[in-house]
Length: 528
Image 1 (cartoon, rainbow, N blue to C red):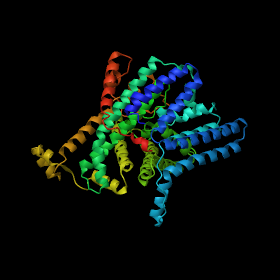
Image 2 (tube, rainbow, N blue to C red; image 1 turned 120 degrees about the horizontal axis):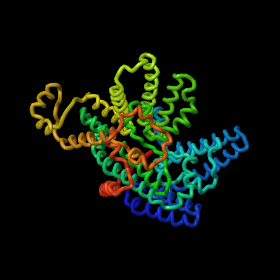
Image 3 (cartoon, rainbow, N blue to C red; image 1 turned 60 degrees about the vertical axis):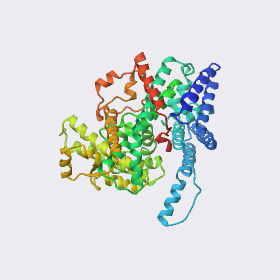
Image 4 (tube, one colour; image 1 turned 45 degrees about the horizontal axis):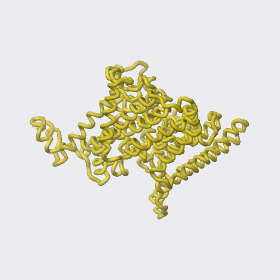
């Protein structure tokens, strides 16, 4: 079931909320059990055949968690490590089979020219997210961090529907105490107002902004997949359109997850915090999919040694972490390259910081100019990475990058060139050419890009708009010094308050979001 669907917005969500608070009058446990049942129904809406897999995963991990907690209490670290190894192997085995079995067989066939064949395995929805979440639970159980061992509570921690499908990846210690708090069993007007406000913002981002610009990204990547050469502005237009589609799609999902959870009095971790404002790639990853970045850092990068054994091993660990992070996003070599690119970006960023502080003890550029230059380099690097993330294969990515590099020339639609008058003489003199058709597509592509760039770059985000309402758990605070600052006037003017004008504005945005659901489209992160 999609957040941006009529079934979710007008049936599932209000019904689940009403029954939850009605059942809560009879006690905490029946209310939590109802949420588990509703969340399993939410998951099974997509494909009931994979409900047994989710249930099996929960039962087995709950058992491993109990054994790990027992080993911690009895101070048996060796037994705990053995159970943790078995538990992680079980989780990665399930993930590997369903997500990577076909990819592995196809790769072997391509490399050694064999003809092995597996029946097509359909990827179960959210398997990457609930697998990582449960691995984190097992590690926390070994360390004695988890304190609640009822299966109903554990099942709610895993399946709570606002975060089940595409995150955020939550920790047991952050979520369960909120459900145990008596205030979560009583409907509160403040929570309803905050939750609906964030839901409206997220729905608008998804159905109006993300889906609106998506129609200008898809044709360009489809043309590259078909082998068509792309000119400079067409290639950049497609790449930037996808860059903003993915941004507002994921931002919209993150907002709707926060808003839906807040209706129940639950604050999920903030998972998205204006990543395109980052002025270096390290800060970008502190703001993009924040809970996944934290998971990769705490459970993979640190486990590999982190930065404890010198700079070279640090760079190696960064590369390995991001390569695996890329593979986590999708079973394809383009995702591996995307992860490798970001591993390289992060290594270069750390290396440059080390070298520049020694060579230039004092800043050589004014701070605003240095921030603008850092932002431009970071943004272009991210856009190049998104080409591999979105492209159907390496040939399509190559054609996109060749077009963006100007290999196929710089061209404008003939209809647009004819309206430039004397300016066209100048442009044609420096090598611009024209092509027939596509004038309106070209114009609307760049109008969307020019409209969305300042929204992503200088406007306050949902956390900043809702800052007086504490919309979510900010488990990691991004560094404001390493961002393009939002407009102060806009930030002050767009500070949410429980007032009539905000109710009218967000009601209007929510209505536009609903009216824009003419074609229901999945959130992009649902495929991971």
